[in-house]
Length: 204
Image (cartoon, rainbow, N blue to C red):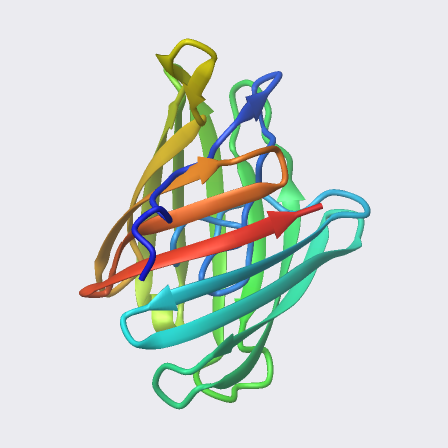
């Protein structure tokens, strides 16, 4: 394992969520839970994650207005490929959250899971997510992010913008940190389902 893969990246632009990254399941989100954010027009995201002894790969792209689709491959458990899709039902406004509806493992290779999720930005760089679903979610799930600004550590050197993440995915508590190396590249690390994980994602 490479210890330098420690990080968190999260960046807001004009009050919006500007550095979306794929979750371990493929959908735009936190660690293992989806958010109500979807990739924008022409965007795509790819990621590699290592959890315990297992490797995971994800690929997600914008399919239509307010819709993203993707696939996730995992060596964990039964393994194999899982398809997913998410549709934005309501964009975030000053007083109301963004709302989305999605499904993981569309073909039911392991455990098809439908969900609805709402996401809302709050003052001080905090963003909340709460949702409910069946399958792996088994009811309610929730998460919180705390944006950290870039910090100067040496003359001419800055620590990347980052976000602390904590979530409950329906069965376990997960924590992590995400660095935004640049607007496209994010590095994640943390603790998920009793295992450490790290990952690298690219959104373009």
